[in-house]
Length: 229
Image (tube, rainbow, N blue to C red; front, side, top):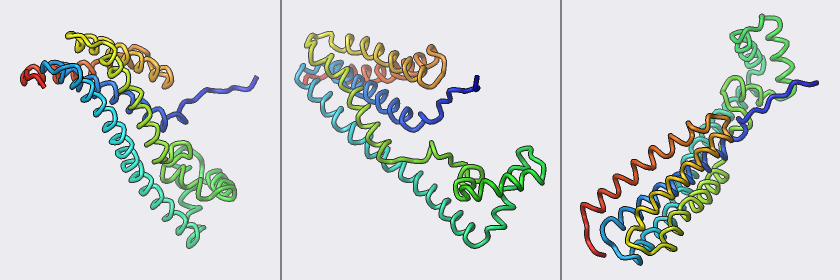
């Protein structure tokens, strides 16, 4: 039977963006609702604040991811262009450079040269991108994918506490939003840990801890202002 391992590295790009967006959506919107509710605001003001937070947050997440990942892509493209120029102007020098990299990783001089030659015949730029620069194909920056993933996941995450507040127009809405949001965060942490191959408890603890802190602090801000909007 062939030996096959199930690696998860190919999931890095979309999982990072999706978890960041969903976590931020839940935490920021729930905290906003709790803070406004703690200031004795009426139900309409709470819903307006939550809705505005969802819309603004989704757009902000998309823009932020696109800009930041585009910067990463610019650096990668610049480095790749340097390699293209080097391969065009000094192919033999690049061959020696790649061979030396393989020697540092444990191959002897003769074998490293054979490996470098074969890989460069197959895909010279790919070999240098992967082994010299450290840009594997599956993790190259994808600004549009990151922006869309973050915006959608933020919207879904933010919709959960917002719907809770919308469907529960009682005076203790802040408490219910906090409890359910922690449940949503725990579920997100469990799913992300499972997809990442990490311990479920680790994923749950690290998202609920920061979510709890954010909600407590914003509740204290709302209590400090304590005004009727």
